[in-house]
Amino acid sequence: MLYNLYMNETFSESKWTILEGEDQNNIMFVRRNESAKQLIGHPDYIYRVGVAIPLLNPGPNGLPTDEEAKTLFSIEDSLVREIQRIKMRC
Image 1: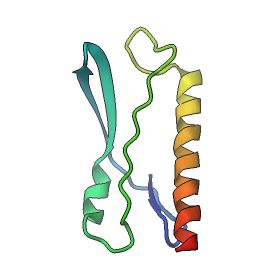
Image 2: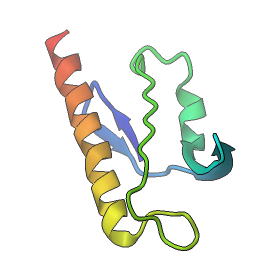
Image 3: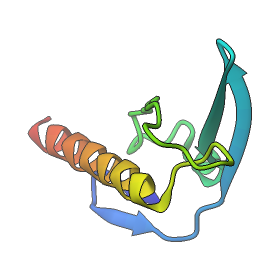
Image 4: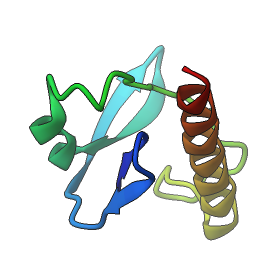
């Protein structure tokens, strides 16, 4: 989902890619919003946020369990709210 941090608008048509790699011999997955490419250079989208969170109990495939995924989504939602709050003060 793309969030317009200025107008509290949500763009529901998002395309995500999951990338797999390794960092210091640890498996790493990256979730990238391919739809965000259309926002490059747009004046309403001045923030780019990257977050790395180690999983506590990954499943056998290395991905988060349903329980841990809920926590990760909650963290993402909190980050979006905080950026919106900061933008409102500017």
